[in-house]
Amino acid sequence: MFSVSHLYFISFFSFVVLIIFISLKWTSFQSKAKKPLPPSPPKLPIIGNLHQLGSSPHRSLRDLSLKHGPVMLMNFGSVPVLVASSSEAAKEIMKTHDLKFSNRPKLKIADTLVYGSNDITFSPYGEHWRQVKSIAVIHLLNSTRVMSFRQVREKEMSLMIEKIEKGRDSLVDMTELSFWFVNNIVCKVALGRTYNELKFTFLLERFVHVLGLICIGNYIPWLSWIDRLSGLEDKAQKVAKDFDEFFESVLEEHVDKRRGMNGQSDEEKDLVDILLDVQRDDAIGFTLHRDIIKAIILDVFAAGTDTTFASLVWSITELIRHPRVMKKLQHEVTEIAQGRSMISENDLEKMQYLKATIKETLRMYPPLPLLLPHESMQDVKLMDYEIPARTQIIVNAWAIGRDPALWEEPEEFRPERFLNNSIDYKGLHYELLPFGSGRRGCPGIHFATIMFELALANVVYKFNLALPNGVERKDLDMTETNSITLHKKSPLLVMATPRF
Image (tube, rainbow, N blue to C red; front, side):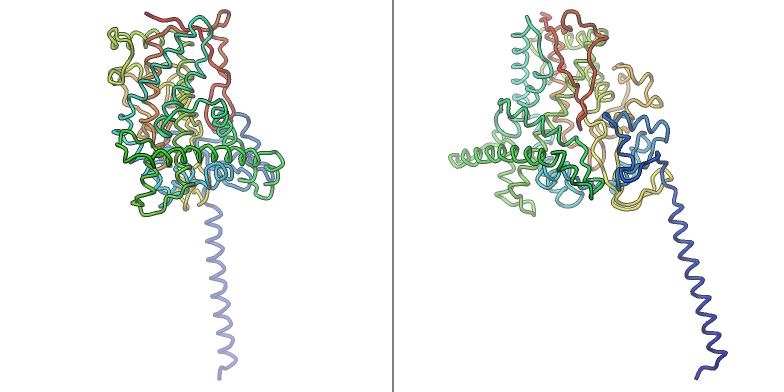
């Protein structure tokens, strides 16, 4: 039996333990609550900071970073979003803590367009992503395979030169010609042949446009009905349906062709053939479903075409605006070509000013100015700030490329800054990130840049380019499209006259 004094002691002891427990919990809560989060711009109820994105998010976010710092924590609806606008922050995200930031957020429109995000670009980090990326890198994007497509590139280059020559007495649309040059190469490499239908061009434009629109449901789920009311969901579903029908016809065409063949050499195989081989042999440890094949094809096709031709147009535009740079580049390519009818890929390695011009273009006009969003998989300490798990991460590559702390006269197009300079765009230098870096960096850098180099070298070698009569260089429209890819809004129309 317990005496009254024992009961008082037990009660008092229990009370003390309870007080200590509550105190510890409160201290823990307070320490968590006081974790140093990055600075944040003021936000509105419900929508958070969505209204501050504007029509050019890369520019709006750069302006906000000038007020609130190179690392900002914003809220897009109910979703926390970290915006990084400095090379130091980009390095911590894509190198120091690369694994922790290697996930992709779930995005409704990407899910609709790209077969449930089963592709390389939007797939969440994990085994599936590793497998599909490995297939593309090993079978299509490795250096040996890229070099095997040399004849395809040089043939399309010849055709582009012919088209410019035919239009020399009238205005030449360099935007359209750049698109078809890149698109024809990607089609032959990925799909086995070119597709010149206007419907096909329009389909790619719709895909890029819809992918770049803000989906309210991603950030405020209970307002998803706005995406239905605005027609965004219907547009995405229609684009997805049209692309699926196109890829189904491509797959059937390949299956039918393979039935009548005893075999193909590796040189004869395009990406679809390779993926069908992988599916048949089942040598990768997981089933390569038909939708996954189509998702990989769409990745290579859309990313390879859209970003590369956009960069080529910006580069030619800046050369026209800067005759000094144009003249210097023409001198280099003419000297190396030594009178040959066309620049070959063997010549490209010798062209240091060409490479500097391309780096300068990618610095000022990164194809994806905000790259693609990452997502933190766990709590991370970043530059003395605590970043909670499941925070979306945006790296403003456009802002970093124009940071006056990194670049002298950053708004000036001056390729000389890259001469005698080791800075490159392959993901090891965080002041120049047109293709991202780390695990989620673009695996197709070599595939894209060799097309870029070949086209730019040959166009400036073969032709003098001028604006139409009455248009001054200072009047050239440099307006950007509001899209996921940084495109020049108006077509680049030029007068092209042969140099020889």
